Image (spheres, rainbow, N blue to C red):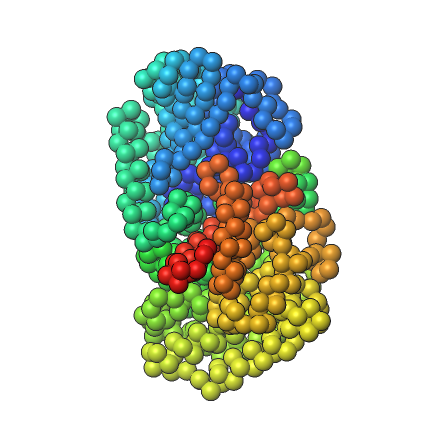
Length: 629
């Protein structure tokens, strides 16, 4: 089965071990894997450069010529289908050939995920369920984003290959009738299996000085397969959601879990870097870090699903960031960090990588880390205040730092900043930033009152009220009859869909309903929502972007809470049709329905959960009133 040079972004499934993850295309090609953490350099980055990035393919026949176009190049005689084993992170790619049906089963064992390790394993089972299938294997690692050369050592029987680089080593171990052959510094193999027969390969990546992995055997791998299924079944069984969209909510919850670095509890925004918001464009960012905003909003979603351990783990991580003191940019918090709390995310251009379908530049690191985004203080306090008191989460010392943050915010909330979307067009008085400053003061006041903790309540209350008055006057456009992106403009912004979610305004307030109407007329396209109009509000970047899936789900939430249930449910059901074949969402939806941006994106999946919960609640209320929904 010929592989595609650059499959669509959405044509992938995600596997992981709660410290890092990998993407496997629906062709059976593992083309993205960074280790030992999400934010580490890649071992396979064929997704960003087919020739230089490296990949690990297991396909259903010897590879043919690589397809150049965006559509599958597979011959009609061989088709592939991909699915997850229900309620797990075990991915199955099925190949239907003229001679039989075969499967590749991919997973990463989860061994003590809370202890950081530099050794990670990917298990790939091959099995045939009907007839006879020949699998073609190619393993072509490219360490450090393809910048580091490696050597190959192949044992005499072709059972094990060792790839040695400067700082890392990778071992490929074979179980069953698999015999590796050298292909330059890489390896390949053809494996023919009949119905009922199995084979497997195990890739272990570790530090260069690490000990070789113990020998692999089929019985041991089957035990690991059983253990990983039980792990995921046990974890999702804790989910309290029993609503109308169980399958999609469970998949979103598992995706959020896969994107969380278990040793610290910090979720990353997405598993990838460099995937474009527009094919061939320059809006290509590195999302493998922990945004205070994204992660804080995920606390509510995880808590509402019953995953309090995950919610509390991030709040502990956030409390440590507060206690560490000022960030390198002089602010109390930085907008994003590495998963271990490291604030240094120097952005560099990897100009040796051509980018997905020539979407360049490819960037590693993120220069937006130094931006001023005042909204993060609202999201941080909002997260700490979810489900329990701040003092119970971060203790008295943590409360003291939180109070110091709010004291600082009293002096600093009325400043221009770069805003939620990290535009590079200059600082402005963004309405969303003011909104979340109001949230910071409001939740801080509530917590101080509930727990009798020391606080300058008079000052905080005055600041909270001043923010609301300012938003209601300067953030409201009488001409548009809507809240606007920044003061002095008539530009709409979908980030303000969070207004009712954080209780700044009632979901059926006339001003809010008017804002929804304005957004529907300008930002909504067939229920899909754009963040804003770059033509009306230049963001300092070239090109365009698709609709933003986070905003599309927040729109559903807002419609549901506004009582527009038929519209909300229709928009939600349509949005679910844009999920990929295994229920995953990237950041954006392009003009012809394709997924764009980094993949899968945590922000989108947490918003899906938020929308589903709101819809279920509002529909149940309508049913109890005998309203027609």
